[in-house]
Length: 122
Image 1: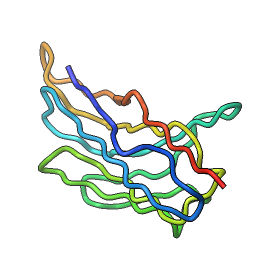
Image 2 (image 1 turned 120 degrees about the horizontal axis):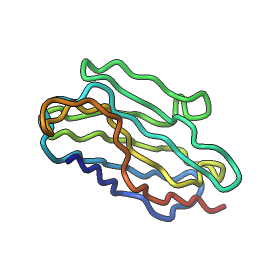
Image 3 (image 1 turned 90 degrees about the vertical axis):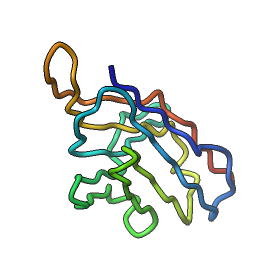
Image 4 (image 1 turned 135 degrees about the horizontal axis):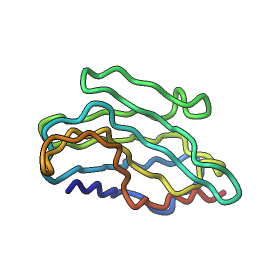
């Protein structure tokens, strides 16, 4: 019913930048919070940043001052601008969204994208 697709991942050198995008599609009525998580091998999935429909943002401590989250509500899209990338930022980055959708009535669930790989080399 609802699909999230990330794009923008890739291989960059330390100190470089990437911009991730995530677009939600389907029978969406509204989206409250959208966010980015990451999962590195051997570690658990952790919050990178999230943003409410009103624009309130929250960042993980390790990315504050380097990453910026934003969204375009009209396009149901969330972005993550990543600057000053470090090797330890290497992970699969996942988009998540708290979605109100229509399926045999109105339902609200948290949806996840399939992830996009970000690799930072030294």
